[in-house]
Image 1 (cartoon, rainbow, N blue to C red):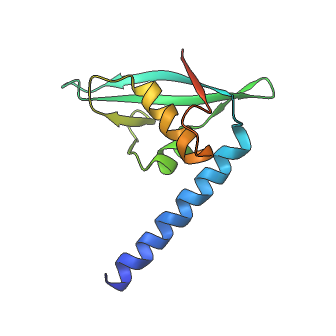
Image 2: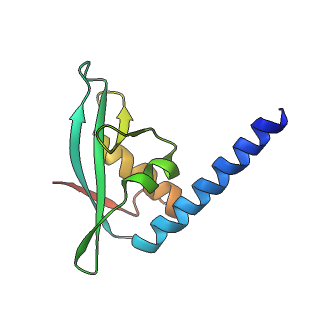
Length: 114
């Protein structure tokens, strides 16, 4: 592995660690993550979703940090997390994987569509 690749990997790991720490400030085990569908690709092979939690009675957008923590693409045009694939509930998949990344417990968070 060359020097640039090692530096990039280190930056990516540090950025992911920061994103996870940030998400843990807003999410606790047992919390509900609210999901909004922002778009579906023309082929139907991907969906763009927005993730929110309620903190002190106000909505808190989690999408950008979740994209980094999950290593998933962020769609700049729709300003949403892009989940690829079909035949699955993308909200369940995103929140399940997010709970795993944050708490090492895939059922620590629940989700609800808005």
